[in-house]
Length: 110
Length: 123
View 1 (tube, rainbow over the protein chains, first blue to last red):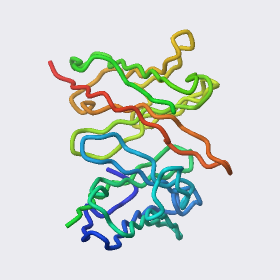
View 2 (view 1 turned 135 degrees about the horizontal axis):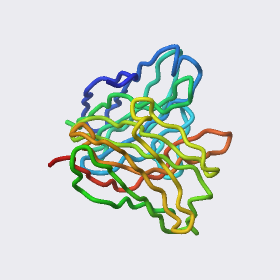
View 3 (view 1 turned 180 degrees about the vertical axis):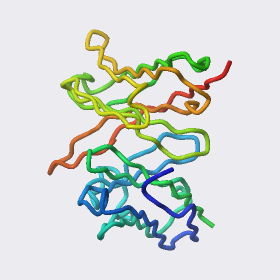
View 4 (view 1 turned 135 degrees about the vertical axis):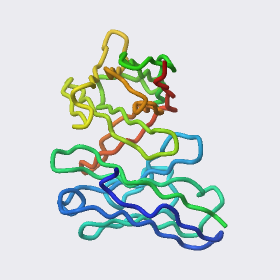
């Protein structure tokens, strides 16, 4: 059972904005640890989307953005595209710096 | 750009040891230049961090697996390895190796992933 809670799925039409929440606790996200986001297309390996709460690695489109507040974080996708249909996972750390992953959210493009 | 590739038996019998290696290519790949991690994903389920190894050889493991897992670096072969003992059907998953990269400002992330190796535990 994941320590970080995400909605099972979110949906949006092409061009719309969708957000994915990631809820943790005072022992992980709320303790000040970074939140990261990964995108996993069907049948593929995960790919880093966001690191350090709101930073995009080179090559990740600007329509992906991350934010963090208190014990939660969010990933926003603006201008949703068909290729964005994938599973998305948040990740943070516990007080022993062990990596924790969220339960995952499937983004459906209608 | 570094690319990672996991390899090892795709079928392991219950109670035996699962052994995987991770090799890299590109950009003068060296296992001693970075820190690394293993992550697994049962079919249809989420990601589970197994553990990481620093380029110094120091390791951290998921508490739920600590008694059975070992991650090491083979500098002679320039490879990363994973061993998981006393496996059961619950260990059936896709196993990924990933680089634990360091970004400007000190932020860290699993920034490069292998394609994954499917391991089934079954008699």
